[in-house]
Image (cartoon, one colour):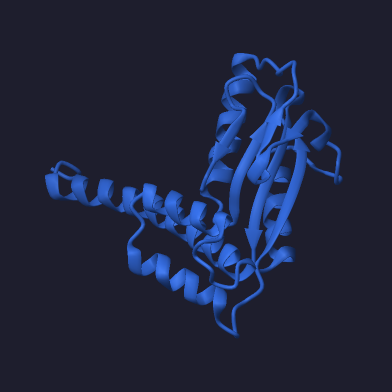
Length: 186
C-alpha cells in the first residue's frame, strides 16, 4: 500500500525538522555575522557573545559559528542591515517585525507580498511602534493594555506568524496581542 512505508514517514519527518533547523542556523549565522562586523571580530563583545551563546543554545555547530564570525570580519563581507517593518493585523493588533537582510529592497517586497496576499498592508515607520516600549538588546515590550483576539482572529494571526517564522530574514516579531507578545526566531 502506498504511503504506509515506515522509511517514507521517517524521511519526511526528518526532512521537515532539518529544514526548520536550517532556517534557525541561517538566522543565527546572519546575526553573528552582523555582530562580528560591529565588534570587529572581538568575541568578548557583549552583543557577539550573547549571539554566540544563543546559537549554542540551539546546538548550532561550532564550525558554523566560527564561519559566521570570519565572514563578518573579512574584507569582502556583504553588508547586512537591520530593518523594521510595522503593520496592523487581525483585530487591530500592532505588529513590529525585526529583520536582518543583505538586500533591503528584496526583503521589503517579500514582506509586502506576504501581507497583501493575506489582506493586510505594511504601515509607515512609527505607525505601530508607539504601542511598545524599548528594552535592552533591541527588544520591545508591549504597552498595556494588551489586545484581546477573538478565536477567528487568533487563528488568522497564528497563520500569519507562521508565515513570518518561515521567512529567512525575519529575526523577531513583536506584537501587543495577549499571548503572542514576542516571537523570537533567533
